[in-house]
Amino acid sequence: MRLAPRPGRPADDGIVPLINIVFLLLIFFLIAGTIAPRPEIAVAYPETRESPVTRPPADAVFVSSGSYISYRGAAVDTGGLTAMVAADLPRLSDDHLPVVVDRSLPARELSPVLNALTVAGVTRVRLITLRARKGGP
Amino acid sequence: MRLDRGTRVRRTTSLTSLVDVVFLLLLFFMLASSFSRFSVIEVGLGGTGAPGAAAPSALDTVLLSVDANGRYSVNGAGVETGGLASALRRTGSADTQRILLRATARATTQDIVSALEIARSAAAGDVILAR
Image (cartoon, rainbow over all chains, first blue to last red; front, top):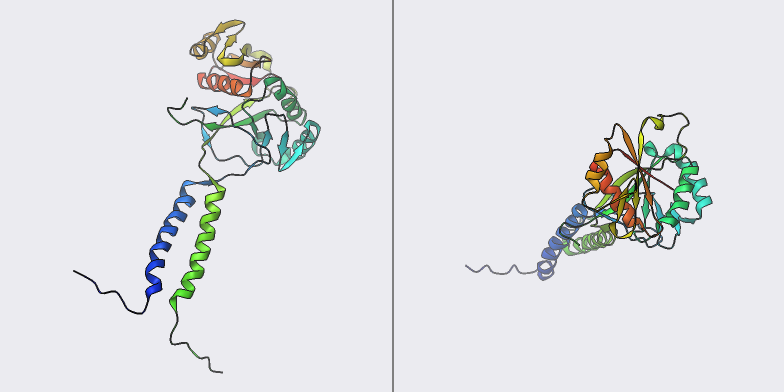
């Protein structure tokens, strides 16, 4: 059976399927993706396999492999981090500060950061990691 | 006042602006969304805390040393990666001990995180990161 093309609207025929596909793509990205904040410094997340999954970290302390610290979008040193975290501590939910540390940062360079957080009054932190894919290396 | 009602409304014009907006939305979500799955490990920092809160002396402290390449030692005795959880459980339970995680100079954050994950999944006591 052949349907005769509708006369008079040649432009619609190409656009409507296009919109359908774009809508489908839009819905896919809306549902499948989560909007993640980008740190100002490059941080390679450490990997874990079985820790509980969480949402992307918001307002985390980022520590890069070169010991650069970024908090709330500003580059800070350890003294500045202490001051900012101490000021934010009353607002932090249950005192669990999210911390993202580069996986290749040597442990001895992590100590000053943890010291700065302790001086600010933080007793527990939430280390944010990437969940490794199953069957990965 | 009489408004002239248009008799011939062209559908394509409104459709084009709709496509524009949808394209912009699509572009935004494509660029802003991430498909990474994040996970979280909670760890104590020990240190000051609140003075007099929860006497820590009531619990034994197990020293877990983390070296590079997944070499661990529990209270000075070296263990392999596979035996770490059972070694931690052998020394005591969560009611009797806490685990003090100390990293050597060669260890990286990934080594610490891997040890933390094993120690937490062993449920053999609260883990505190030594500084």
